[in-house]
Amino acid sequence: MAWIYLLIAGIFEVVWATAMKLSNGFSNLPYAALTLVGMIISFAGLVMATKHLPLSLAYPIWTGIGAVGSIIVGVVLFHDQLPAITWVFVILLIVAIIGIKLTAGH
Image 1 (tube, helix red, strand yellow):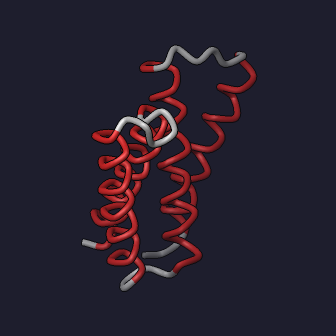
Image 2 (cartoon, rainbow, N blue to C red; image 1 turned 180 degrees about the vertical axis):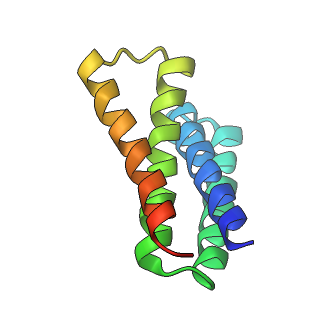
Image 3 (cartoon, rainbow, N blue to C red; image 1 turned 45 degrees about the horizontal axis):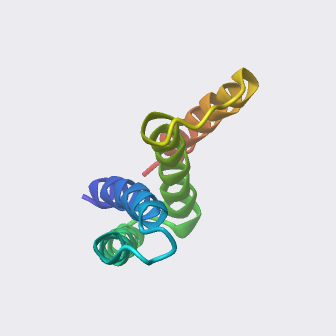
């Protein structure tokens, strides 16, 4: 169950980061509210995950999900342009997240 909490926490990290961008400096109240709700859910999921997983495992995976998810949202939703070499590092980040999960023994 801890892994499910961690996955949900990572997804909501992407939600709050996206909502924060859409809030336009917290001037758009619905998106500002979604930012705060997303943060609460994301942190709550991380808290629940770290009850059963070591911080040294949960935190990098949580931030990795958030990072990769935010990159994907930026490219798809905001039409961010990334150089090809950047995608190599995004793939390395994904490989690192999977590697941490597979080798952690939890």
